Image (tube, rainbow, N blue to C red; front, side, top):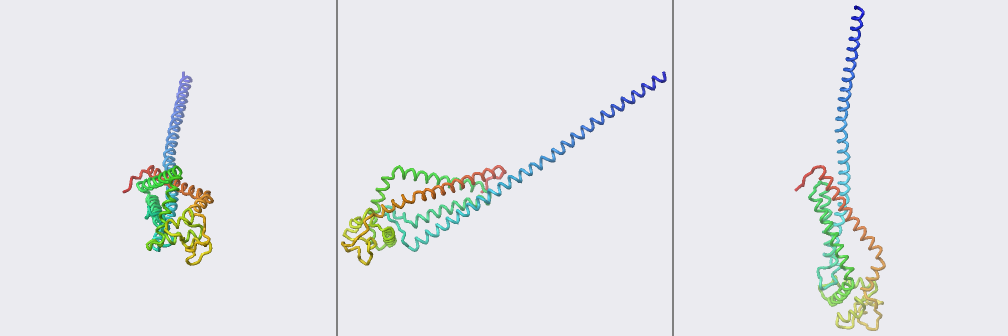
Length: 292
């Protein structure tokens, strides 16, 4: 009996040891699970922090890229505006050739283009550096309007190219009558330079001057051998080709260069629109509100 009791007690002790080991194992598993959860919780903010830093770095890179891009754009606009004002004030060799559109002079066109480029660049610069969604959206809309206007004008020009050409010729011929007017020094200088440099006379030929001036004379710059009052001598040799034809010839010879310039302008506009919208969405994701 005593032996049985001792065996029973030892078995109970063994079971107690097993139970104790199982409890320790369960406790170890609980601790391991807690450690894993703690590590996971620790990793989450670190990962989010890294993501935030990467996003912020991309935003800064995009912001300053767009700022530099638009700063160059703005400086070009300032340069064009300055050149246009200088041409307008100095009354150089640039003037309107069209009596139907007296404001459509080279100086005024350069001023208008320079002002548009300068304002657009300013919107892009300020919107980028201030991270202002309202200004960025305005910049995008202005570029979109300019792009659509260019496309519409280009389509209309090609559709009505013959009519545009005939109207331009007639308008230029009408403008020849203003050559001797005292208040059109710019127009006179422009015609003199064009005819001398391109070796042409009139719009379609030297007879255009006869019709415009109501007498058989041409400007002295139409003479192949130039000297004072040579245009009044009917025996002199005048340049027979019209200046309009020379312009068309120049455009034909330089069409690839002009096409390349046009494509570069298009790419610059598309890049500006892409940068502004990308920066707009990045700022929107960061939770920034519209700024006044």
